[in-house]
Image (cartoon, rainbow, N blue to C red; front, side, top):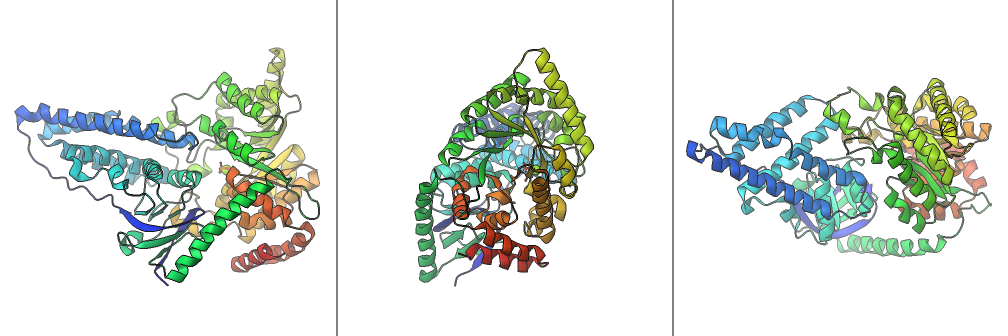
Length: 580
Ligand code: PEP
Ligand code: MG
């Protein structure tokens, strides 16, 4: 057996190909003195390099496929904005003049100053900003230093059918690689929730991140197998291993083809229990992929994508138009619109500009807390959602509830807006259902009280796991602790499902756990009857549901819920998945 390096799985799929090492070599920048009469020329050289960097980024932006998540376009826009900012456009000019130095040295000096500022702020979000500065400066420097410096995009050339091995890659690079026809990506750093990971998943590129020392162990052109499901890279595979993985690739292709056959069937267990399969949506452009898999509706529409990467939040009319478009397209199927979940890793540009730094943003003013503190933005959104409800089957969902007091405030605000809309003779669904996300452990433990007051609950496992286990979901260092099968997590999920049952309201799950086929039978056996996940995974989930018998699952799951050790739980879940 060849060398195996384990990392974090980002997207499933197997890639077989030769290694393409992508090095972001430290550029050797030296200082030299520029004679006074040539200073203006040096400044012009710097400005030309800046202009070229802008053009390069715009060209990358224009090549982004429309189905890519909106925040990826925003990412490139952020880099473009940096290229307009005085800290990168004017400060280096000052340095050239004051120190009479070459443009490269000035850019490097300014970059170090900026990076030091970010490094002192021990905050994961700001760490990403530091990386942004490095990416942007690197581009400008390579333009200044000419073709020999190897522009990152040029290095990506030749990535066709190759497995790219890199320390880290930016979303812009993922796009170029996709364009080139890359087979897979492996990086040393990064977590499964980074922008790069989101993009790779959505483009269907087998990807593994957080693979330690990957660049040191793998050589150029070495034969590799990337097992996206296991999060592993295998170097110099033996013929028998290659044969095995080729077989798995063929099997995967065949399976995807077969899955299309159950597209129009209902999700129903062998003993006749119906299950709702809903889709998670980020942007209206996701609708065609929902139609392709015949989802029963939308279980989570993350509206914050409409708000980020822009100067001003969208007004009521703009929001109304977007929501109505989605509701109409879904033709009476449920559309669950989640109210704003800003804060943590998703912030308004206004807030970013004011440099508001929270010590622990995930536990700070986020989601409904933020909305109740800034009711103006919230009320505008509530009105837009209410108005859109006149055009179909809309459910309003409140994220990150932790107290009943918050819920009361929301109810009062919604009632107030309903009254106002009636006065203005604007149509809305009088019986619009309001639900809450259960993603704070306290809310799960108090789920009975929430269930008595709400029309539906939706379990947000991404956050529920992060808060229950005190594991930052964006931090790759603690990713090993992030475990949906932790007995405490399972208890919280079970409590929520039971609370919904007792109150007679539906409970769905819209966190990533619902979209992972490894957990489908477990969740069914725990009583979950609504799954909401990214569209591409829904047919696989349906196939599992349609081949399961609830009675058998329930019996088995009781054993799982009694187990205390995570490794025992994992073994039991694996056995459950293999039962016929
Ligand atoms: C969750 O927390 O599980 C969830 C669906 O919401 P988000 O990932 O947007 O925080
Ligand atoms: Mg959440």
